[in-house]
Image (cartoon, helix red, strand yellow):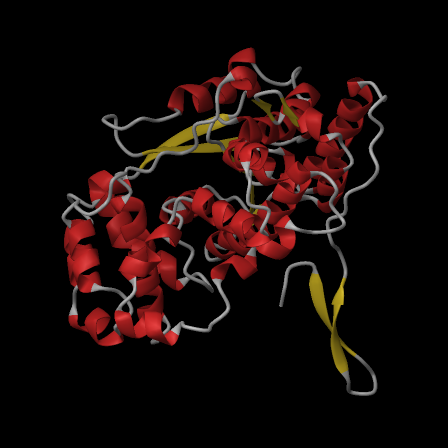
Length: 395
């Protein structure tokens, strides 16, 4: 079942799929002062957070220190009448982290703040359990930390935990910049080319499939629909006039609906907690598509209108900081705690019998060879996740 759809069973015994919500691009008024957009956006942000706060209970927030989780934290602290608990993670002092930013927000908002440290051995120990909880093999290195944070929140007696997921796909985060630069300089107008560049921008295994798959798999895929078909309809959506909005539409329908939201729901629900994502509220998405694209990506400033809408809630350091994302040291772990797991799972008898991936390529990646850019860790994490998922579901 696709996102925004439901299966309707009728009295006569027939059934059919119906659309109950679909993102739309609404007319925007380029002459309207920016204050009009920010005021409407602020009202919707407050409503979205308020409606997701539990009644007469404490609430938690996953706080990375980025603008999205920070604004959710600030609104929760302002609107809730009970304690707000915030949770941050890091992976050891030897690795880059955002603890200074999350700590600043927690102090500014007066939350009860906890930092949890997860090393590579802990991640390796819980990775099989994490993957088994997912309906599909989500290859995000933050899945296991998400599970462990939800478990910590459950121990604190919480039933609801908020997050800042949705800010990038809804309001124009940094991942759109390469696509916009490509569009400015492209000469080939073939829509498939645009879809290929979009998949390359994920920086996953798309460009390595020819050397990753075994010859038998490559032969079996001859004549099969190409992977570009999954994103091309969104990138060419006729009901979106703005190219930036088409990118956001693709991000919402793919990264949001098929990746972020299912991941959050499965990993929090497994611990008896509701993970709620205020920035994915359909009303906020509709409002975002009714804002002129130049206010979402204002020059080189991403999510500009969103930052204006909450500028009174957060320190300038948070509003003006560049996007960095949570850096998970997968590359390092695969030289240590995850190395044995990678060897046993990806080069073991079950994986060889399955015959999906070229052993020579996988072995080279485990040894840190074979790629110009050092993406071995990210690629191997995807393969580990898939192999564990296949075993969990006995496939």
